[in-house]
Amino acid sequence: MKQGTGMKMHGRRGTEEDRKADWAAPKAEWRAREKRGKACGEAPGHGGGPMGPPNAFALLPWLLLGMGAISNVIKGETPNPWIGALGLLLFNSLYVTLVFRAFDRRAREAASTRWCLAALGAVTCGLALAYGGNWLLFFPLWGLATGAVVRGRKLGPVLFVVTALAGAIAGLGGGWDALGIAYGTLVSGMVTAAILALSETVKELRETRQELARAAVDQERLRFSRDLHDLLGHTLSVIVVKSEAARRIAPRDMDAALAQVADIESVGRQALTEIREAVTGYREASLAAELDRARGALTAAGIEPVVRQSGPPLPPQAAALLGWVVREAATNAIRHSGATTCEIEVRSSAERVSLVITDNGNGVGSTPPGSGLTGLTERLAAAGGTLVGGPAPGPGRGFRVTAELPVEQAGPEGGGSAEHPEIPENEESR
Image 1: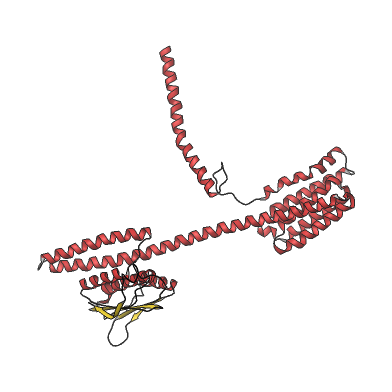
Image 2: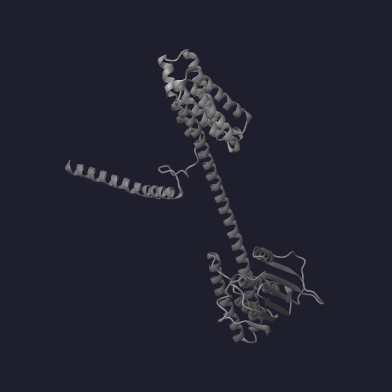
């Protein structure tokens, strides 16, 4: 028996431990949700979402101001109690209708709501004139309903009329108590209107914040798609060109082919690094680095590069944008132009910088401009610049891309002028 009892106790302890273990994970999750809710302004203990603006149910407890009048009717202290009871029923019905319609914009602005408010005022004035005393407390409720229903510039005149009627009618039988009734009517209307206006403003701000967040997400997706297109388009074109070169020269010169394969490996590793940087949003295309890459890629594709630079060093933002243009234009020349030469010219001054890339290839094809140039056009336009692509002027066929940007008063690309001296006029490299 003792052994059996011990086994039962052990089994019970095991069950309790299992229950505690099963409850530990949901409990930790609940606590984490509560912490997130407090950080985001959610109602504690519910976790159902952010605290919303006040609703009609928040205005219903104010009907307790009429408990004194109800007590008078029940105790028989009111003359013609059936008329008083009917007036109470009508007042409460109109009040509840108004506060619920006040939180629906279409219902609030309807003509029937205005008539309900006028009827509530008539019932309030009638009951106050007939009975006085506790019945005067319905005036603050009328003011509260007015503040909930009437919005904007109309609230001031309407609330002034309501307050004046409350003070005048209360003054007929209450003497100096009329000041308290008038004050309560005015304050209840103003406070209600202010709270509801503030809650609607907060709601609009939340909606605006959500809209801005969605816009930011869309903008980031667009940025990433552009970066990915520019990165992969250029890199894959270089890999294809170098692979073709390695295949052609492998039968004749294995060492040169292996050098091309090593270049392919280097380009692939660099592409992986650039993609990681693009994903994290930290990559800035350096104009100098892109010019060097363009030289190598064009040379590997059998296109003779000619690069000219003149003017002072560029600020980082302008250099980054022009670096993307060089990458995209060089990629297009390698993939589509069939050119034998490609000229890249950068001219900068204290106000503007221009980049002109011209090849002697096939010119404009039958297909519309690609997403790369379209995305770059939008980028430069956002920075106050322009990007134009089309047939090169003069005899022969070819394609020209011209980019212009305003030069901001910022430091040069990568550092100060001491490290980057001004480039001599018309310096040419091949």
